[in-house]
Length: 142
Image (tube, rainbow, N blue to C red; front, top):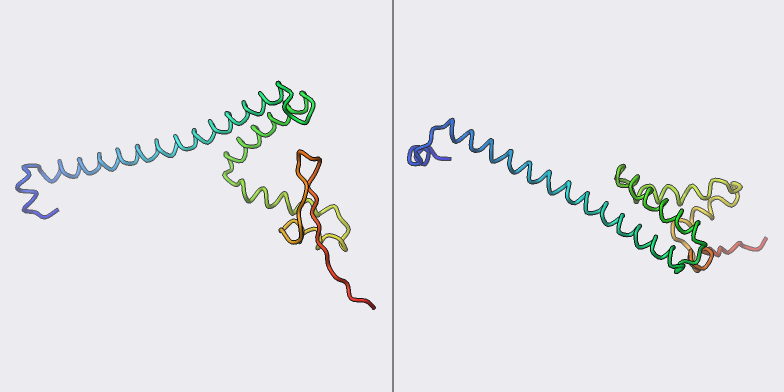
């Protein structure tokens, strides 16, 4: 702030510094409140999704028996909370996708990893009983 403005404002330098500090504090508090509200909204969304899943289980609109459906809905809410606490949803999904191939023999593992990375075709659904991933490779005749 130019010194002429300081003189014209009638405020001392100390009062101006105090006002700037309080303004910065207020801005920080508002920013923090906004971040906290955003986190609360995402948790509220997860809770709402759980309530919808639970209602579908109770009304028998799920393709699972009621006990399994309720257990899965609760597990999904718990996982959502855990992911939000760590903040690493996408990285965890990618890691889980690649871990599926670890139990296979070495000869089949690379093809599995390629399928998990999106190569090949995908059909089916979880509701239909499973997702089928297919990758066709040509092997030259010997």
